[in-house]
Length: 315
Picture 1 (cartoon, helix red, strand yellow):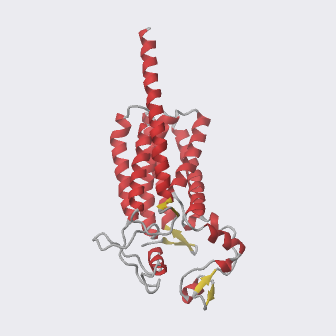
Picture 2 (cartoon, rainbow, N blue to C red; picture 1 turned 90 degrees about the horizontal axis):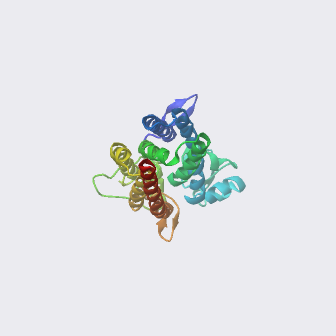
């Protein structure tokens, strides 16, 4: 695990956030190249990319705060830091400039922080929130510039899949989004004080969080490889053989929903769960249902357009 790429002026360069921005940049480059091929304004595509960064980060952070299980920690960090318990050692508490509670053997934040919920650069973004926020931003720019939305989202889908590939590598370097303990050869040990070791300590699997984690499923890499496969298949096949505008985006959404739902089964990090099903799995189900409806409508619109064009040509 490499949580940072060194430091500048004493401030660490977050590996997670660096790769997140790299993913956005690569996605924008890919979408722009395809946009030129299909006659879309490349300048507007760059605007869409910049808007997607802002909307994606805002949406991803909002869903993380509301649904990943940390909502009350963020509230208490602002209202009553003594109600926030960090399960770390006394030495780690001193390094974090916290207040050590010897009786409960937990560390409390020393000061209120009403902006902790907004510090996305420290980690904590939920993909589906980013998808909604980024999509809203792209749609806004597309409508402003008069871009054909369905043709645009096909190219965007490929770019997003590539961006996710890079972003999930950032998750692996940061140690977040880790999987369950496994005895398989793919099992990965994260270092002491990593999210995995701290989570296993809270679950009673480790004697202390200052130990390397037990081998876990590298779920971040599972998803990265899955997103790379989606990128390659859709980029080489989908954009050239689609039957109607928007089809590639719909296939990408279903492919990711199935991939994410499968990976959630072996994830072990803290995240929202309702009725034994994770937030991402519920959202994946909603995505599939929405795609079925959109597929029927967009395919019907395409057939209607072809028929109308043929009739006009006949006259």
